[in-house]
Image 1 (tube, rainbow, N blue to C red):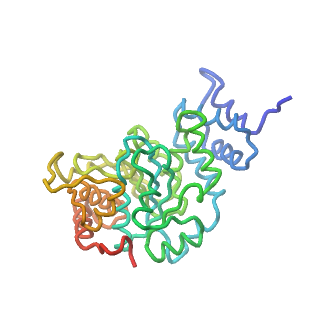
Image 2: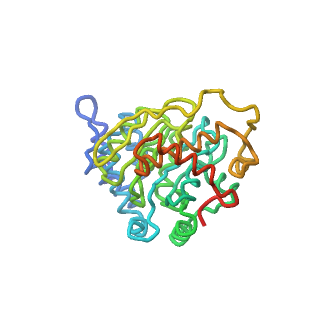
Image 3: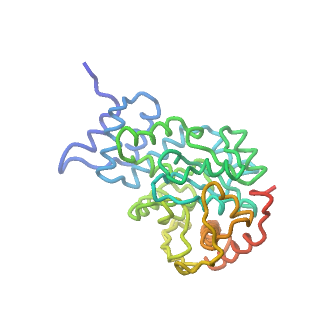
Amino acid sequence: MIERTALSAHVRTLARGPGRSRSLTETEAEDAMRIILSGKAPPEAIGALMMLMRFRGESPEEIAGFIRAIHEHLPPWMADLQNDQNKPDLDWPSYAAGRTRGLPYFLLAALLLSQNGVKIFMHGFNSHHSATGSTEQALNILGLKVSTTEAEVKQSLSQYNFAYMPLRSLSQPLYDLINLRDVLGLRSPINTVLRSLNPVHARAAVIGVFHPPYISLQVGATLLMKNGDAIIFKGGGGEAERTPIKDVRMTYTKSGEIKEQVFKALMERGATEETDQTLTLENFAGLWSGEIRNEQAVASVIATAATALFILGKAETIEDAEQQARDFWQTRKVSSMCAG
């Protein structure tokens, strides 16, 4: 005889039927994720819970509850980084894996910031669904190593002001959960959770989403967590990458308040120079070195870097942040991708 599991109570709450079912409270969601991370929940119950939440639509309280349980599960050194001399300023999740995801110009924006004193912790998973390759593959082409251990993260932050940790190294249980997509055929709430996770408790985060309705969900979870500010927007392919050719509505948090602002386009669509060259993952590093010329790609790097500078409070206006980013690009050290 198959016995009910501890997770079944939460599945029942979500699935009682019309008029009786409801979303989980923050406390219930936290308990559900603790059960999942304990390894004691059967896969059938986990799949049922995730798909019911997906069908109903996740709530900010459910996402925040999941995150609180995950923070308890993560190794203590991640939270302790905030007391380290190399504490990250910016959390940068990279989990977009759709076919519309283009080349990772956001990665060059992050490296541009790191070369100018901003410490960035990037984490992600997008290796097997993206036509243009993963963030990890792009890092390899740029000659940068991923960090898979505490020592490697700290060394990379100290030496380069930048560290990228793949999800499989960040948390094997979360890696297993995100891979449920291959079993269930749909993304689960874990994709939303990972974007808002901020595992190192950085003072700000840049979060890209593919579907605009998820913006309010990410903002709500950020406010409930009180785990730093965040700027959330519809980014290129779902990454935290700002397009330079059209206005982008930004939603962000500041001191517990929700704010919105439209960041104006930096250039007109199609207004590129005749000397612009085609970029591929293989010649991606040439954009940084100047061997490859592509005005729109450079504008994307500048626009994305400026967005991060804005949420970090490095500039009072987005226009000032954009000018800072332009100056950073003009004075970048082409012989080095990062600081040092």
